[in-house]
Picture 1 (tube, one colour):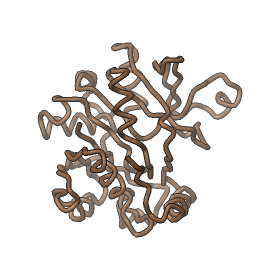
Picture 2 (picture 1 turned 180 degrees about the vertical axis):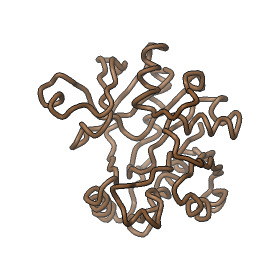
Picture 3 (picture 1 turned 60 degrees about the vertical axis):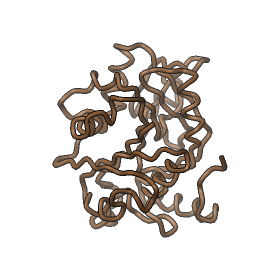
Picture 4 (picture 1 turned 30 degrees about the vertical axis):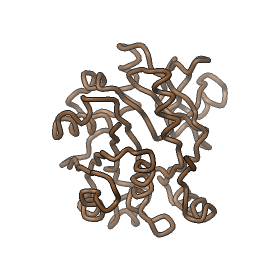
Length: 250
């Protein structure tokens, strides 16, 4: 299985830090955030990786190169303008034909710190094959994320991107937050359009409407986004508490 690390985000809420450093290259315990993901992927023998670039992307490419010194193979998709997360996948396939169309692939929001057991994610997908598999987690501010409602078997019933806080409190909208790791099947490519689109806002609702079957589950992983100074600081403290090692035992 291959992996896409979505890494093009500007990190507006982390300015001035992100004026000179890409968001995914911000150091956590002395190591770029993106490196944690590359090491995690390698641990599960996922060594073919695509990274999309936009803001200060040359720093990412210069640091990781072709991936050889990290024991993986890395290709890069350079975006002249910031594309949506779904459109980024389309561009990667157009630039590197076959990367997304030959087999199911992982998509990861790389601006999160996580110890997710990718083996567990892949096993769930194999037991519940569908066009898209979504990981879930309990977020302290779920109204800032996509909310996924599933039945007892994990089949997705509906997907609401960044719902109103009051709807969650009242129970009008139920479910858990979408996490940072997905498995998509090559069939998703036919649902991708030319215009700028995102996974949660555009692609996933379209998949539900047309393909009908998506699955989601909570792998009970540590997940911490670094989108604000407070969250970035929390990620720093969390990694220090693990002696700098979030890799799960396998």
